[in-house]
Image (cartoon, rainbow, N blue to C red; front, side, top):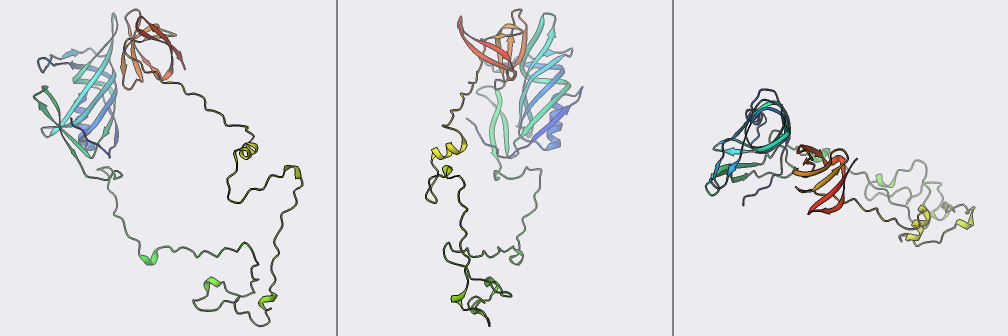
Length: 339
């Protein structure tokens, strides 16, 4: 088993124009954006494609099937970018659909060649990883044989970006925190400040403050007036008076419920369970009626289903709600509702 981990990457979006070889366009994209390792996804339509299958018994590729004449809808394109013998290696698999006299035909396999009509790609790069391919004699395939990981922090910038060096701030220019004034005690009285007196915080160390040394004509400390505490106004509605609670204690649930207007917490509504389809399941579609799942694509976002007349269509599960109806002849049956 071979495994590694990437912590730095980019997402590159690209369009390949008509008449371009798909793999040549991908290699140009790798050179332009300095891609050594990544994942490729794409949609669009092709003018020509060559699909092949691997013969495991003979450990070799079967002759490629050529699809030409245009009208090849690219239902799914998925591949990866790595390195083999010092050059960029692109491996891709595709699912194609074309309209035939007998209906829609869906084919797929290992994509060896393709001529683009219009293709849009998403390339997710792994900038801190380099995967190398080599032929594995045990299976007869070119597989990942070596993984090189660049030592870099998880939050470092991509390889194409440059960051300015950090500059230390001189001690003389660093901001200083303002002195915090002492809080007034809860009990007792505060001395009355005299006109022209400086704050105690600005006095040098060891100097007496004006409050400690009163000036001429100032009343003695014992005669200093104190501000009487302010009492809260009387409660105009004694009926709404609540029971006093010790300072710092948390309110009870009854008090919170009474103030918010709720008598008790409400239980959350149960969430709808996700439905994962398998090949052979039956979907009762409001338009196509009885459909049999032929293939599940990606992470279950799309399915290819076969209708009663043998036609294969592609459905998006993001706009359907599937409700289980039971099992019929060993097949799970679901009712589809359009959202």
